[in-house]
View 1 (cartoon, rainbow, N blue to C red):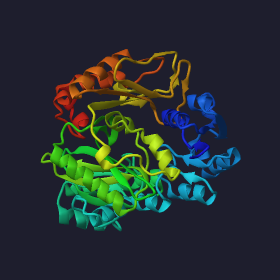
View 2 (spheres, one colour):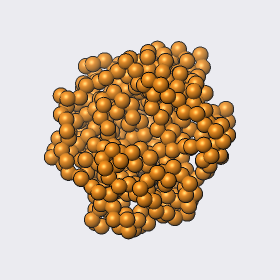
View 3 (cartoon, helix red, strand yellow):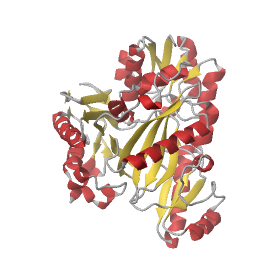
Length: 448
């Protein structure tokens, strides 16, 4: 087992990894930008190193500074968390070349699955259902137009690189295709430095359901069932739950086995997530695979009893999985609300500022993952998520009741947050009945 791990991230995920290190008796090394000098992760880690100015390009995205910090601290491994460099094959390779273990998949796996068009080809080879579309990235707009005519409208244009909902546009008619293509390509270029797109038939009003995977260095691969992530705004997830209320046992088994087959096909090591779009008839289609721990991993932890971050660390240290597929069973229901420092009344505008006072919820079945504290100044340079509120219950009805209770107890004075928005969602008939999809917020389904 490692003696010391550097955490190449910030915020609540850095705090989460620090806690896992403590549970395993491992020394944690935090890194922080100048803007994060007073951040919680920098305060509670065993060691902390400043890696540059506030701009992420000069700090959390600066590979050389991160590797130098790891070497200077004597860290034997790097945990990248999510976001920033977590799916960067070059960073993973740089760590390995410097004798530092990367807590994630092999660099070649990250590279293969990070290119969404290549990932789709791999899914096809593994026998995983995919939506009808181009075999890989299209060469230009003319090829995209030809594919659109072949597969029929509506179509979706998606960035080959990157993720996080960036570089995605839908064209419902031929007249919309050119604008969608140009916008998606420009956004992909700006966010990932790669404007290539692939095109596929758009699944109307789909559910977004993903399967958690773990694989060890001995070739063992398991799935930890699925998460429902359909409540989204502009392809950004806001609320997740496990298991999916929509799936029946037969579809769940087929989807989870398909995800595990894909992971086995690529020799997947560590934690990963296979994402699917599911239509009203419960037909599912491969969307992408994320080669990192996910923001929403706690709901899987709550319904399986598996500490995913500790498992990541053990796997990277060469230990085999301590359980088999047959050992895993669903236990109740869990829901996660992402608490963002945003104003829903102003089109979810970010609301950085000082937290003058705060109160976090408690009671049975409640978990709060956050890096916020009273007096903390939320900086304007990073993602607006300040915490994740997770509840679990014996069933979905109890989980909903507990989440509503927990949200009502959550207070962040001094900044506007999304807690009231989540209360509104959970009180709606659409959510309670489970009758929603990825476009439900845009369609106003939760307002009726």
